[in-house]
Length: 290
Figure 1 (cartoon, rainbow, N blue to C red):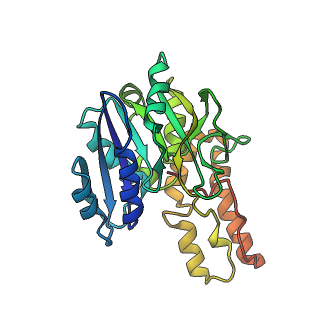
Figure 2: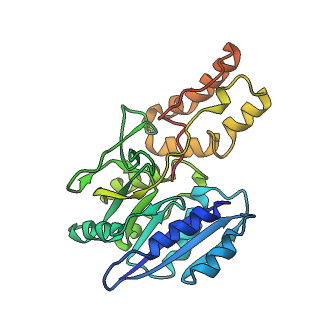
């Protein structure tokens, strides 16, 4: 059995190396492990260090404007040439627990049909759940809540893309990561597309590792920033870029998608006119995928 991990990195050399080290230390009888890393223009020596330290990792060098979704699509397409039995999505700031890969593969092997197996991760300091499978809150296709892992596998609507095992059969049904979503929501999109073609998303028991939660704010609502900067943050790749947002919402938002698409831009204008200083810590749309 071959497992190929796919990762994206940008200027997080120490974290990327630690992540890969935790991956290659996984013990899985009869398995061959390799990886594909797409490095988005790091200037801290990430690509060179990975190539030297982990020779079975294929390193693809990209530009600095290559964000998570686009990088993961490139990594996925390259990894399929390795003919893996499973792809393992792995955020480069994850530290996998010993035995995590075995747990994920065990869940996949027990399924009678193609599936995706999601690994929950916890905060390295306080142990709280940071990323996992998720379920929708109401009708909005970007408002999700985390699902706590249970002693047994459980089905989830979609997932955060930090630790995700995708079987070859599931990948063939679903197709590639949608790089046109640029940065965020590509993991939610993949899980929702999986369900639409009969692939189950299963949350594995326990935790697969640790990963700190990225700060989730809406800095474009901060009135202490110049208006030009707020517009740049709102419309930039890590904000709410209009075209990728429309692409996702048309696919998953139903007939109300134009309302979902417009609402944060309206709130941003209201905040600018009303002098609001700070965005809420937020869970909903300003989330960082993967």
